[in-house]
Image 1 (tube, helix red, strand yellow):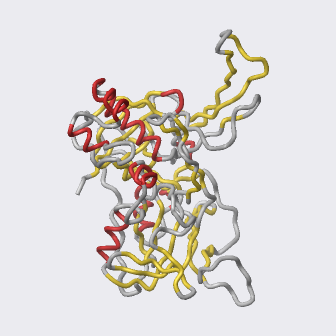
Image 2 (image 1 turned 90 degrees about the horizontal axis):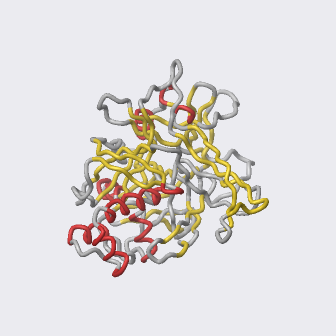
Image 3 (image 1 turned 90 degrees about the vertical axis):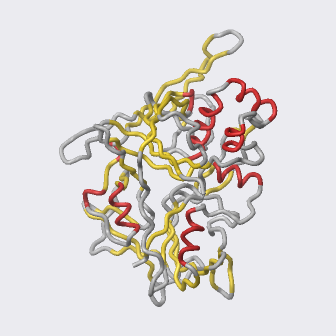
Length: 393
């Protein structure tokens, strides 16, 4: 089994990550997304692997395959990716002084910050006489002593994510605001006439970037720098311990270095109560829309059926869907636009039967069909459909 190598990626300039909203007319604003999709880092690291040797790059562009057996095993072909696979993506804060960077994740959909305290969404049966949409037996319900508007722009630190996976409420100090990680950096642009090399009249627009220069203040996390943690399978020793990447729009530079990061341990597997949660770590492209792979309707309920295990889907908390697309550099054409379940979405399962170890192995491989098609294989290599197994206490 391929082991995961972790890298800390620190943008050295403002990072531009295009979203999927229409953009191009005069006066429009090009919105960005944060955190970026995992495919951004898949492209950057695969380009770094190919860019080390001009002959290998030429061979891949010409024939779709590297001459080097090690690179060919890692990258495969555009139609059949090799061992390369993004297995972890999160924001990160580097304390400096040689310490391991800390993973920082968006708040899961079942966790809210109300005032200074975290509150959770818990599966509850609808009250008698209350009608609600949806076919699942339980509804994600806020458990809070008082009504309060949730605070936005908050991320979850590594320790808090570990606590949440174990079914415990994170501490107040486990939340961190976005301004301590990055700052929005809008830029003004002017359309150019490529023939006359002059500015086009009325073609003024803005694009949104992100500057990774965290603010430090009393009581906040103090990081020497901020960036991303990226876990990759299949690269082994093909990449130097540190180097530079072209990352995001305009190919802005980023520095990467190998780190000894350990991903949060899998929560206790289903026990006496035979139930668990799945938390999406990256956007998911499911063939049935919002339903994870392996889940189907059986006898009026939705059942998960895997190789050696099964469970009932009892509840779900989903964010607003994303649109995933991109640009295929090899074919020189846009990738198909696909609706994705956003990262942080949560699924609750009960009535578990079978081998808990096989469940954990299935989650660790990514939530993909047993026999993915060509597009699914490519998206799997890019890091989509990654999930974490959590306790449902």
